[in-house]
Length: 440
Image 1: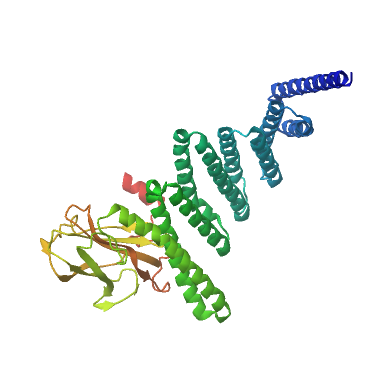
Image 2: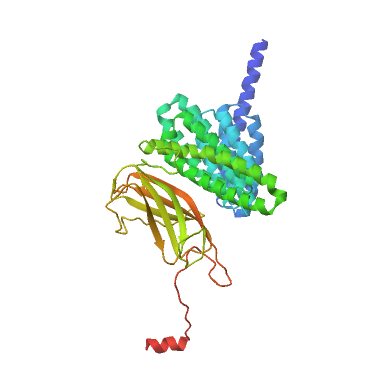
């Protein structure tokens, strides 16, 4: 008798719950039908009211499908609310994040979880446009990065069940994380944040190696490593300069430099691995990469036969490349490249394109690259030197941005201040009447 009564009670409860859920569904459907007729202010108010109703209902719903439906509707309302707001609201984003988390917990379907994360990532990118300062922007970008890492975990769970489909998605996700580095790193507001980001990326590169994706993504990892090395070198030089003038900061700057050296050494391993993969018998101990049938011993900068590191605009500039060969090299291509401190390629001439190819080189010698009037303006510049075979495809020795020179002008004498180049130019004034007279 008791069992029959309890069964009846359970059936009655279920019917009541079903009726309540059907009423909730009809109510939400009716809301969305009327929604487009509201003004912007009315929409915000209506969304907040229905959000309260759905939030209470989600807690009481026991059926999995019903709960997922309610959470999806709640998510839809919150996304709409975020889109309508003119200013960035971190509370709404946090609430939306909680909804996505509870959706993922309830569904337990990895492919659907991945789609939820993709959707949340899209909302975050839209929210980034509303950020007013660098701190707000960095918070959003950090959240996008965490979203990418969560996607990675979800994809690996999916990989266990279906290897063929998820393999490409994992590779794509890793490529996106590596590409996202530039956005994430440049948004960081402090040195400590930048160092943490670099350590995070070192950990990611290690996992890429262990999971077997490293060879396929080595080109991107190499480019990222070059950027990190450049930043480390710039900051290292800056710290060295500051430590000479500020004794109070000396300890802090030396500890910073020791961290930078460790990070730089870790990232340079990726470039050495790239050389091993792409070139025949490279020697990572050498400065440059290539076959090393001919090597660059040194590059010196001169002006009027005097060695220099600091030049002035329109001054004579000479780069003397000291080379040595192991055997006779027929018609070698010598090349140089000058980069700005931001990594912009300013020029990249070579002897082949300039019709200055030598028939062969043997033993030790020098190649001189000359500019009569250096057009560069104030700044720090990176200099690359290389020797290639006659086709220009096989590197014998390539020193990428290994050398540095500076351009420093006295502004009291030289008036140009902005940009990278000084171009020969003239200024002229004419009255409007004169212009008309000339046309006639």
